[in-house]
Image (cartoon, rainbow, N blue to C red; front, top):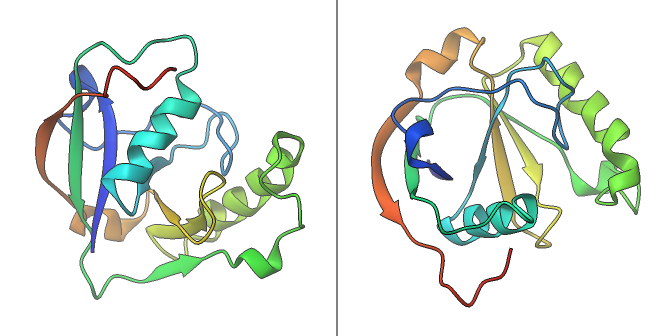
Length: 149
């Protein structure tokens, strides 16, 4: 399975997690967020880079997850109706934290809070199977100037 991540060029030479808090992880939990498509990876940047600008140099990372690698999944049906609301970050972070602590898999499929029926994939760099996940290549990525951050 190929997944995508768009980041500033200086951060695209390897797969690394910052440990910053996000929807599915608390601060200090190292997770790499990826998306099922370039388009979703683009939108994730647009909504999370508000005020930071989209004009700096970016690249899209093409990341290969072997098809035989176990992938845990969070079902939308198992979440509260308003799970995508900012107020539910704590709830989602508990789910992601439990997944990290359990060590069940190197990959967690989670629903996109931006687009219904789309998926993001979280990568756990501490899991032994993470060594099988490969950064296949990077490509230049330019945000259309009509997109406003």
